[in-house]
Length: 148
Image (cartoon, rainbow, N blue to C red; front, side):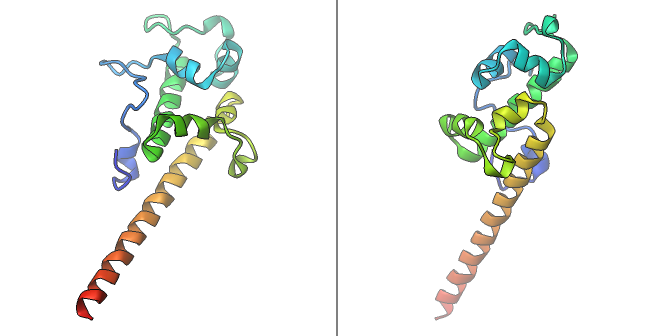
């Protein structure tokens, strides 16, 4: 997914990590494994009792499915920026001074996903503006060079 697209369309990024099946059902175990969460972590982050943590489509609580879908989508948004799965995983695990010294993974784990998603979307929008400004500047320079 190109960053030149409006942010509305980046909300459904390419599935870099193959978290979703043909029916768009999230592979919750895959998301949890990538983030290296335990059931207790998932329970706190998703506000779902540990006893209700299930990953099969028919038994997964709706609240858990929604959270896992959001986490998977956020992971794919960041992967769309880096175009590299390993860089994305490193970014999620590294403490970030712009997030108060917490890693994005820990932001999710302690229930601060909405703040993290806002941070990701703002950063992607800023990157898009920077890229657009750069392109405009390059076009102006080329036009000046042609005139000279």
